[in-house]
Image (cartoon, rainbow, N blue to C red; front, top):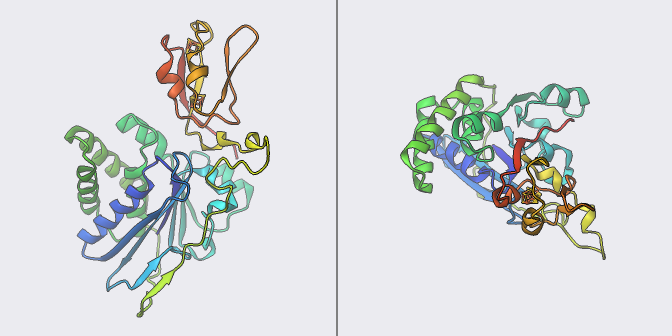
Length: 294
Ligand code: SF4
Ligand code: SF4
């Protein structure tokens, strides 16, 4: 399985949850992530291999049986690698509410399965960006290898290791059960892993994939980090006092002040970190789940 998402989504933890659950189910397991840019919002990939005998392969998975995509905007970026090997995959899972729009594009020729994990995560645990459990549950269910109970044990083991408290773990367990129940297993043809040690090399990410690269004077503007946004800050101008704190604290310079001193958000570059929302003394900034049209 190969997982794709953005830094801060819990992509590595999703791959570990499935790995641990599969291990508890009696399989040989291997899971590993690559981070590339090591930056919140930048693309992250993680891998889980599951087998009934020793796994001698190492490194990236170029031909996954399942692809789990935590952020549909990554589908628009060839450099993200989400679609590498998609032709041989049994299914591509997408965290989206826009599956019909994606299908209507006619670009993807693979069985697609979708669920709005972001909304369910927000509803269950109150944090839309913590996608690890929802994505891990989707992968576990689609694989057909892991029972709901084994998934629950994998969730509990990994979240305890991360130091989450008991009530939060219970909420996540309910989320895992909910996602598991809403999906169906897909048929994954068993593959033979190599009987000898093989290392699949990683290569380097494209230079523009995860960094706001400054390749020429003044070109930072061309890097549209707005595509990273999961939640969208919106300003209530009726209560805004024009204190300018949001303008000062935005780490990406995505807030300008207009001629009257009101803040104006540049949504092409706002990455949705919501620091502005935290800083606003009047609570004049609200967040909404981002909805993109394909
Ligand atoms: S969410 Fe707010 S602070 Fe963060 S990038 Fe967007 S405008 Fe700036
Ligand atoms: S921090 Fe809040 S009150 Fe101050 S300018 Fe920004 S939105 Fe307005």
